[in-house]
Image (cartoon, rainbow, N blue to C red):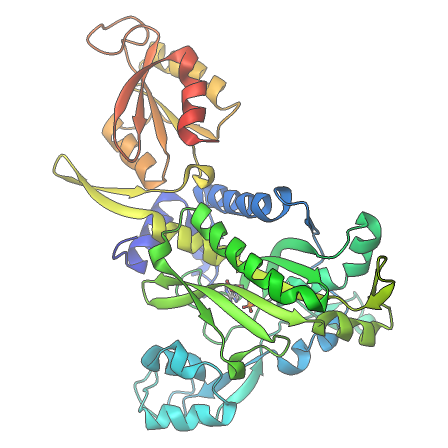
Length: 465
Ligand code: GAP
């Protein structure tokens, strides 16, 4: 990413089918976004990459997929009913509502505002003369705590209806299954449980495209250990978290760690460090690494009456495990990947937009393009496409000029294009040799002639997959 503006990304996303505004034909629903045909491939690849990194390639982490709707007692136990709130401020002039700490953060920076007490929010807004983003006046009412959990009802008749919550984090689905996983897998400490899934928060000020929305996906690991081991394990997970973004292809210059100050820590955490990305509007949280102590398991033991203790068979000691949590936002990771991959260069005096995704997460790995729509050519190109699509996520495109098709593939980040011309079918020896196609590299723009039968091996080697 260079000086990419968010508008450029939003516009490219819509045009090329990465992300569309939600419910658009009805005038939209504010801050909802739908992944399109290319976006869903990218997001699925990011999720697979994460799952391979944290679950498949490790012996010590297993996965679950828990329900979004949970017994409401879960949220009393976890502290979300009493603590999961943001400071809401009303503009007395236009009656619009905002998140007070975010208005302050925009002017004074995240470090200055992190952990600000509720009573200090309005005085600081007035002292700093921060205007209402909507009407421009500076007339703020006293800040109030606003609980972010979405409520809904379960049950079909009025008297059986029960108020429940849409989960605001996937983590609790892991904690309540701790005993089930322990008993069914016979894992020994230290070990982790991972989950990818939707979470819902009634955010006061969503915005910045998919950065902050009310419905989003998380990718979380709860890593359980004995209390004595957490200080040793925390740096290991810190390194793994950083390596995840590095392997995903994010430029390390755009990443940094930021440790939470004590007064900023969530109610369950003793130590939290965030990986932040340099977004076009400033540094923003991508992932949190929180030492949650034994808070969650102890609370669930208390509220459910079930023992969640662990027996160390070597020492015969029984204790409640402690937990360290690497928690990633999936949509934020996808947004980061989009911003970081966006490049503009100059090709023969023409501006080219290219998404330089790492091959593993590129939505389409290889495009097969017949030079023209002549049947003889498209037939041969289809044959090649049918071979390649068995192994690689491939696309066949015969519409428009070859230049426009290359441009589209660059904009959706396809690493390789295979062009089939009249030489390929032995009808023009000024083009490719018979039985050969042209392989074009997205980043270097180098084109090489390749024998058809050698294509799969070469593509595999170039994509390193
Ligand atoms: N279980 C811990 C937890 O939920 P969090 O810092 O509130 O911690 C974890 O959320 C990650 O989820 C964040 O780092 C961020 O990437 C993502 N996230 C949180 N709120 C979000 C929102 N409203 N929209 C999109 N992503 C969000």
